[in-house]
Amino acid sequence: MLFWVIVIVILIGIVKVWYELNYSRIKGEFGERFIAGKLSRLDPNHYKVFNNLLLPCRSNSTMTQIDHVVVSNYGIFCIETKNYDGWIFGDAKQEYWTRIIYRYKDRIRNPMWQNYGHVKAIQDLVQSINPNVLIVPFVAFPSTDKLKISGTDCVGRGRDLIDKIEFFKQVVITDIERDKIVSIIENANIKDEEVRKQHIRNVKALKK
Image: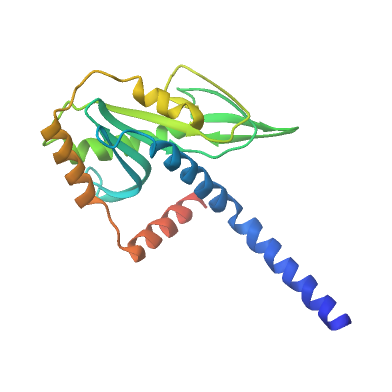
């Protein structure tokens, strides 16, 4: 009996450690799935949705992972998802924002800066089709309790994302251009699983 109690305790400890080590990744994936579900409600006749893209950066010969890209006649929407809890305060020009969870306070790096790199990667890909194409960056927070970011309207809650996208109603991309852009992004997307895993390892190494 004592043997099985020890085994159970050990297993619970292993599961707890695994969960703690993978919590951020699991929560991030949940947020991305939530946003992907929201985007799936867009009219497929007018919007093409990409999730979890890995694209080459032609400007510096690296790769960048983009959570979501929506291509439409009304522009291209480049979306970064941050599934943070708590209250988040900041300004669009600040390098760091403040996150508060109960009495705990920490800093998070301004995700708009990260998304700027994603926008640049999209621009590099599609400039041959339309060098002046409208690319709208947006940072979506699916589970934040309170969000107060000044100096921009490109940050908001996940539940408001569809309204933000559908606010754009002026046609700026022709049907032919839209289809070409969709094809370029589809062909550029790196699907090789080992390359994707190595990219994740590289990103984690840079954060250490």
